[in-house]
Length: 496
Image (cartoon, rainbow, N blue to C red; front, side, top):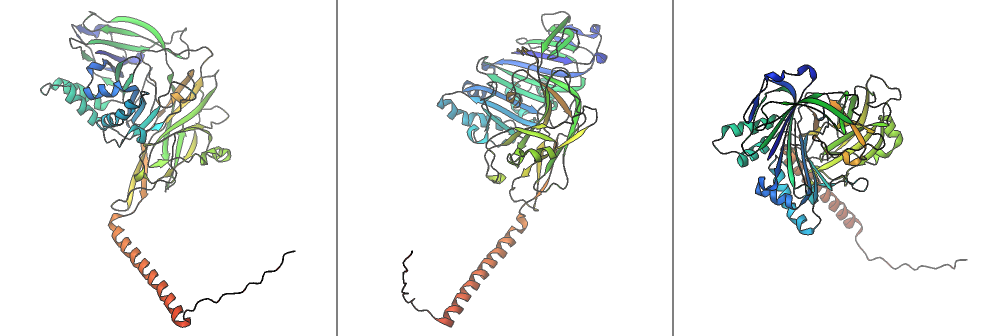
């Protein structure tokens, strides 16, 4: 196993290199205000047996989790996802693998939290791969907002019962801002990446004897030769067990994801009713790139309790009234009539292009997205709640002709929306501004406390109505009697 721990901090938060202490296979130093990323690279034989079996019948598997707690990011970790559990999956082509993966993948996902997955071919939606080939075949989402179940699963596999230090190390993952698992059949390795947002980080890392651990303390470096599609960094690198002191480094690498420097918030207009409208408040329409075409997009990840009507979003005049330009993508299928409790599919994702003011300014603007709630299962009290994660809002800009994005040490791909754009697209992300990146409301449903009385009253009304019809028929019969109808002679006229 290989581990890479990276601390990315601002220049003003730097610490003195002399304060770092490298002792054997450990590194320590003063607390550092930074973003921290830990990436573990593992071979198949280092994974749990059930996960090995799943990956052997998988072409690609990417699991992305994002926290509902807002965090501040820096440098190469600017990409955003809606809070919750995202799965992007491509099974191998042969039919036997597909049958086996029905059980294995959903079993694995249920270890990560309260996941309602029956099989990839019932619960997942299909992603388009006719435009660009860098997209997986299937997508799944579940509003899982904490990692408690996942951490417990890992602790049981990786830690001995008496190893308190191991448990403490993995319990720190519960506070992570995001967690990624990536595997593809070409590399035959799995990568697990945990990210903590900008905060005070404890600088104390040890390397087990059989593991290679690299530690980096990096800060931005805006060198003149760094392109708009690249990020320049400088700092210190240390390979534990090999280096006696940190070594200085300076390099640049391509990155498709950057920070736009503006924010947004989201809320439902009140009263919400059964057809709530999501309002996006964008703090500024300032373009992130001056000499390139850029368009502002919002990607909504909608659980199956709520959906967008694609036919409603195809009317240009209606879109213009909501500050929307076009519906660029909606996952299929989306049943417009089915209630929530009879559906197998997870929900839907919607990519909308927003209409920005013609004149660029630092003043904000709003856009409104009409949505529709499905009928919910009956509840005690006659009221149910629904929640929708914050969307991901970003500028999509075209990079210069000839720009390439080779693999970088901090690359993050297969996020759902990157497969909907060309390979030369730069994403400039807006930061969500809220205390919790989930919005919702209440919706009326059938009250189970009153359902019995409703059934009784309905039965009485039906019986009384039937008795009234029978009574009226008998009244007519007793008054007029009944006789067979006499044949009527019909005279046909010749038509001219």
